[in-house]
Image (cartoon, rainbow, N blue to C red; front, side):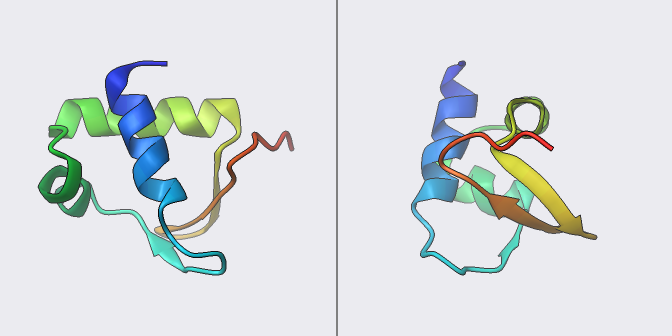
Length: 69
């Protein structure tokens, strides 16, 4: 796992249970400092690993343990 992937994981894990997450590249950049390309690469990796699952549109479920569909 890269620094950007781990940083995004920790950013997402810091939200309260039941929090409706709308992913925003700019919000993540402002909060943890990863740039656009690193953000998008990290999101793709967390999706591939099963930590992020899209609910609809820009709303996602985040899991601290990977979920396989």
